[in-house]
Length: 336
Image (cartoon, one colour):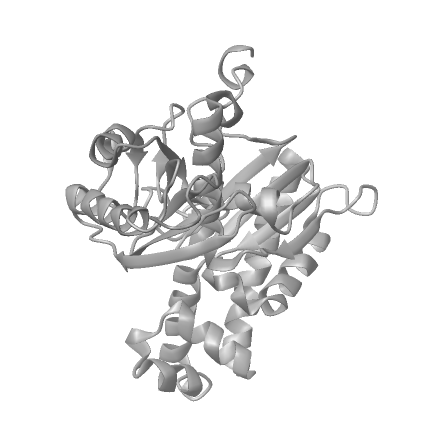
């Protein structure tokens, strides 16, 4: 075993639609070691096998107190069951008990965006904030909210699904079953779709994007971000459009929740102000009561791709030490 034994270590696992990453995290949020594997997203049992393999790899080298799993899906209020995942095969999956039986350590299940929000609040860009929203921009849009030192999960555990606010009635079809959801206009999938549309209508303008992808039909959000960082005008145009939609959604959230800070993370956010500045401009232009209320801070996440596993590990460690610390407040469900 490692010399870190007994140091309050936990393993965090971040499960996405294409990859699973796991890391050993200490009490200060530092990742000491990490591993990753592809996610067999069409088979729930195989996804569980991957999680167990990652944890066993790391726990063979470190003594850990608990395991936290950040799952890309709706996690029930008991933090044990994945109710639904649009990009994975989980449907009413009793994931915590299955993993606890296989791993022999305390296990905590959390929505992956909630885990990332918690990590940014505890160790990243949102330290010291009393009301903070986290928006994760990847294939879709996820989110989490920390309110006065507690993750807000809602009555049924599925709060923070900002990506499925309807911003365009009757708009683009979403994997959730509705049309016009926010993630269809301000996510990695949206970038890819807009880039393909541009390449079809104006191949000359999109020539750098097409060059990166090989052909127009292969364009993905990553090609847009790479070209934008190079200064390609077409990529910058696509990114600015997504940024404007991002700002529109943030203004809508501000009207309901009134946070002091919005932290934007996920792969798409890696372009920084190329995305965030158009978002800030649209937010300021459409905020309700603009000019007569304070404006929130829109900032990039500080922890990068590790945020989900760092947050999952920290929540699992806190739960193992004192389950009340990581439990949702009872007033969320019963006092209204």
